[in-house]
Length: 91
Ligand SMILES: [Zn+2]
Image (cartoon, rainbow, N blue to C red; front, side):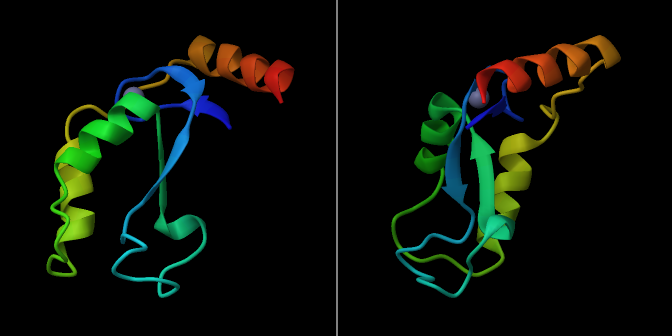
C-alpha cells in the first residue's frame, strides 16, 4: 500500500497500525477507523510508546495525538500532484 507517512512524510509502503490493539480489543474495533497508516520505521517508534499491558481506553487515541503532534505533513499543491502520479504508477 503506497502512500505518505503522516509522521515523516516518506512516500513508501505503509503499514497498518491498529489504534485499539487487537490483542486487547479483538474484533471490537474493526475496519479503517481503527487503522492508522504509517511507514515501517514510524510504526516501530509508535509501538515503543505503547505499553504491552492494557491501558485506559482514552490512552490509545491520546498517544497518537502526542505522536503526530506538530509533525502533520503539509502537502503542497505540487507535492500532491506528484503523490497522485506516484500512486497511479505504483498501484
Ligand atoms: Zn514515517
